[in-house]
Length: 281
Image 1 (spheres, helix red, strand yellow):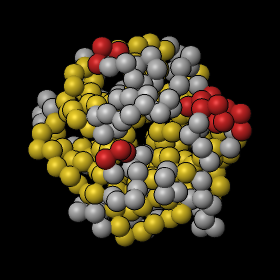
Image 2: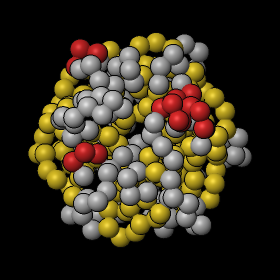
Image 3: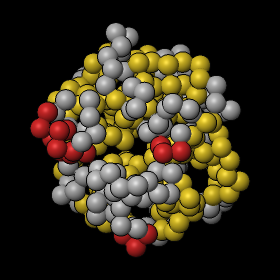
């Protein structure tokens, strides 16, 4: 691991979907089937335990937590007392749902694997699903190569999604009804695999790249202005802290579920950066 990175929490199975919300870092500990919260004092607590593997997180305007339930292919909602199904996406495909970004209105964009990653199935493209605040859902983009981390610009007009098996960030214009139009390549990333991503106030995107064991600060067009080696695989990242200038990075030595559960070697590390986070998540 880079000496410039500060250890924040260890002993995790596989940290995913980091989000800064209400003064704390929230994330999914996927293979421990729980959502955790790391507060400003460094205390890491379990918020919610599931019967499934959680991934992407988001919030409705009223503060209700949304959680991707991967193999059930559902979006769950947690109001602090009761867990219920917000949206059932099982009709849209048989492979696990994955990361998600939720905008200010509570609209969520959800990706999925599209193929059996852990069994070594040949990759194939898949879609991005929109879930409205009332739980209605529809496909809004297709032919995506493993849509993964996603961000929405502060004005709510642009969605950028990482295509892990396409080695690129792809942008869409968001219509008033949440539909996605004007698809374009935002940045090609040769040698990198975009997983979780985070947007900053200058419009650059921090990209966690597990295969190259680093996080990259990428600008539209593909220029990389900063690289931070992570040692282990960089799975996801988020800009948080009171000033949103702390880059939190989820890292793991492996993505194999059995090894993750056995070794509990996943961690979250951080680094102070010059430009604060912006937009969603």
